[in-house]
Length: 149
Image (cartoon, rainbow, N blue to C red; front, top):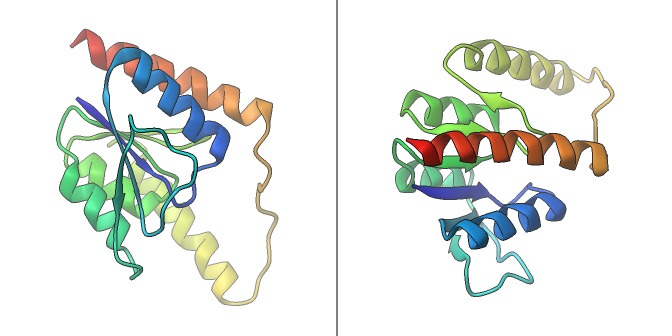
């Protein structure tokens, strides 16, 4: 088992939490991004992809395998991973599954379509203690379950 983190958009607080848990449990941890992520210690493997569309996503798919855990908020990436049997959670604690991924992708595509056509909507931009706690709870629950297997 390894943990892969889509590090381009993941909040620092969530990245730090994942790093602490992975170090404590001695689980291989890979941060994938198309730019360097500052202030990482030697425990993390940094995989830097070319700065082209979907290159970091493609790399995460290539590196992941059934039994791994990926943290991403990218719903199309989550769909690709879930279809490959990879466990996926976003940085707010939402777990992507075969039962919910198509609905979440449809909702995502709808909101992107609205934005592309000039219709603005409120986005949840803040990431505070509440969001971090929700992520920590989901992340710990998934890790516990996956390590028992």
